Amino acid sequence: MKTFVNLILVVLLASITGCAGNRDLITKTSIASRQDIFQEVQTAQAVPGRTVLKVEFSIKNFKARFINTYYKHTDPPYTSVLNIDGQTAVLSDDPVLEDLPGDFKNNPEVGTGWRYNFNKTLQLQPGKHHVSISVPLSDVIIEKDIDLKEGNNILNISPIYNAPVTRYPKFPRFSKDIRGLSVKLNNQDI
Image 1 (cartoon, rainbow, N blue to C red):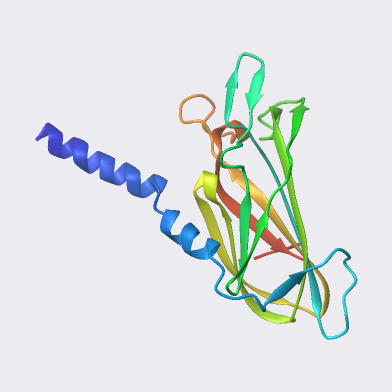
Image 2: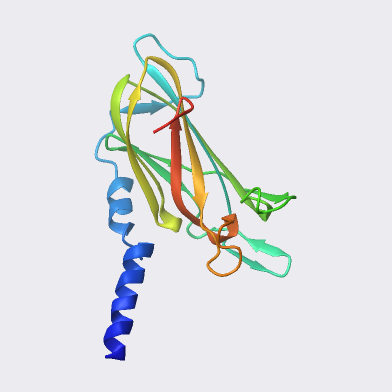
């Protein structure tokens, strides 16, 4: 009976935490099925009849810490994958070690860790698009339908960090990895 109860608890915990439940979806959305949706551009100058989508995603993380050494993800590197209507773009960056002072109760990114600033500027047709954003090493994916207007558009992606289970469970910390993403298009939650 005790084994049965333990098995039920493991199944419930796995369903709550995701337990690699997103791996198949992340793998599926990381594979490009099209190449004609967008082009990467250097400038944010929109061409008439087209839209420029500037993607901004800043996240703080580290793989491990030992004494005063902070290890970053190198094999595989810490990246994010953007999929728009079947075409993918990998968002990558060389991280910078950041030591942010303050109180973690006011800011979940307080402390020492690697800051990743993922940015990409894309040109595509205005209108409705299906967007998937994933962070494979954190097993996080979010899918949204967006409506892009002609001209310049900004897609801001922000991490939602996990909170510790035992001490200060109401205060998320970047060192506990991420549990989700929040997305804003032109400063509007979507």
